[in-house]
Amino acid sequence: MAKTSTIKIKQIGSPIRRPESQRKILIGLGLNKMHKVVERQDTPELRGAIAKVPHLVQVVD
Image 1 (spheres, rainbow, N blue to C red):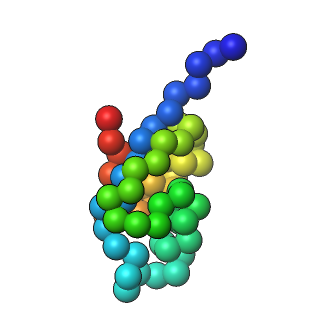
Image 2 (image 1 turned 45 degrees about the horizontal axis):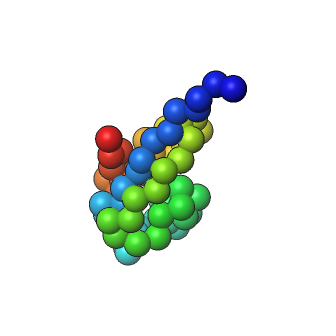
């Protein structure tokens, strides 16, 4: 079985006073609190979601 690559995402910005669509993207990523780190499977869909809110999230190595 091939090892799937994962990516760690950290929330660095607050969703307060942001459009509803950006809040929903954060929830979809599994983020809801500042400085929370989640590990997700690296897919093109995930990369697209990160690209929509680069001011709110950071990719952690």
